[in-house]
Image (cartoon, rainbow, N blue to C red; front, side, top):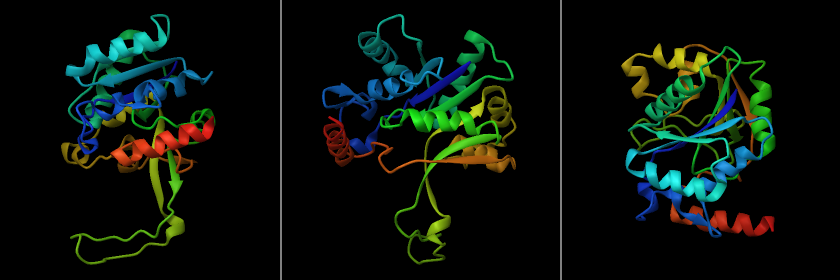
Length: 234
C-alpha cells in the first residue's frame, strides 16, 4: 500500500483566525480538501490518512465526507501534540487497520501545502527505490545566513548548497516506524521533520526538487497569494 499521511493537527496560531488554517477556504474550498484532492488525483496513492487534533476530529470527518463521500479511500485519525506524534499516530493507525509489509510506502505531507503536484508525488515514490528516504525541497532563492544568537552573523553558506525543505517526504512505512522508535528523547526534541530522523541515523535521504509554488500557508498573506495562484490556473 502507498498511503499519504496529511498532518493536520496544528492550530495555525500565526494565521490569527478562529479556524485552524487547514480548514480556511481558498476560492471557496477548504485548504485541507484541496490538499487531500492533490493526493487522490495520483494514481499511485492508495489511501489518504488525515491526522487532526482530537477537538477537530468530528469537524474534519464531516468536511471530508461532504467533499468526497463515504466511498473515497480517506481515513481520519487523531493527531498528537507535535508533528512527530501525529506521524506516529497515523502510522499506528495504518498498522492497526491494514497491517504493514516491507513494500508499504508512506508519504508525509503538510495539510497547509495544497499545491503539491502529481509529478512531485510520483518522483518521491520513484526516488525511494534509490534511497532510504526522500524529501521534497526547493533551491534557496535568497542567501542564507547562520546566527546562533540571532544578533550576529556566524556564517553565510554557499547559496547553491542551501535548500528549503518542503513536503511530501517519503519512506517505507515499517522502516519509518523503526527509525522513529530508535530515537532518543533528545533526538526527538530536535526534529523538525521526519527526514531529519533519517539524517540523525545516518540513513540516505534523496531530494526531489520542487518549486516555490508548493508553498505552506502560514500567514494571512499566504492565503491571498494562494488565491492568486488559483486564479492563475483558471
